[in-house]
Amino acid sequence: MSCCFTSIWLEGNIASGKTTCLEYFSKTSEIEVLTEPVSKWRNVQGCNPLGLMYQDPSRWGLTLQTYVQLTMLDRHVLPMSAPIRMMERSIYSAKYIFVENLYKSGKMPEVDFAVLSEWFEWIIKNIAIPVDLIVYLQTSPQTCYERLKQRCREEEKVIPLEYLESIHNLYEDWLIHHKSFEVPAPVLVIPADHDLKKMLYQYEENREKILMAHC
Image 1: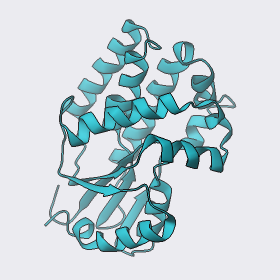
Image 2: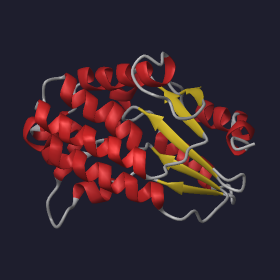
Image 3: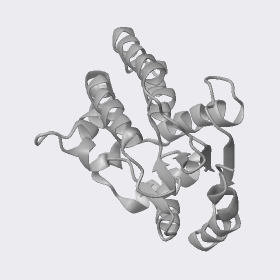
C-alpha cells in the first residue's frame, strides 16, 4: 500500500467480538470501518442465501460463497475515504476458512470447490487486494457458542458447537501455525474471551500498533 493509506483486516470466528471491535475503532476520525455485507447475504432479490446455506449447506454452499466472494471483493476495491480502513474479514478468509470448511466437512462437492478455488486464484492474481495488518480476535469456540446463543440471530440458531470448533481450527492453522495458506500480512493476535470491559481495555492497549500498522 501507499504510505498514505493503511488497510487492516479484522478476522475471527463467528461471535468472536468483531462488531464490538469495529464500533470501538469507528470512533477514531482517521479510521473508516467496513462491516461484512451480511444484509446483502440475507436478501438477494427477496431470497436469503445465508439462511439457505445454514439449512442445507450441500445444496446452497456454492450459491452463498459465490456471492460472498463477489460482495467481499466489492468491499476490497472501494475507494478509501480515510487514511486507515478496518474491514471485517476478507476475501481470503471467505476462501481459506468458510469454503475450506464446507469442503473438508463433506458438505461441498469437489466440483463446486474447484470452481470457487479457480475464481479465488484468478481474483488474487489479477486484482490488487492490499493489506498491511491482520487483527485476529482469538476466541475459544465455547465462548463463541455462548455469545451466539445470547444474540439470537435467526440464521445462527442452527449452528452447533462443532461448526465453531471447525472454524476455529482453520483460523488457528492459517493465522497462528501457518500450516495451511499464505498469510498476506503481519498478524496481531488479541485474546478475545474476555468481557466487554476487558476487551475495550485491550483495544485501547493495542490502538497504537493498529494505527501505526503502515509505518
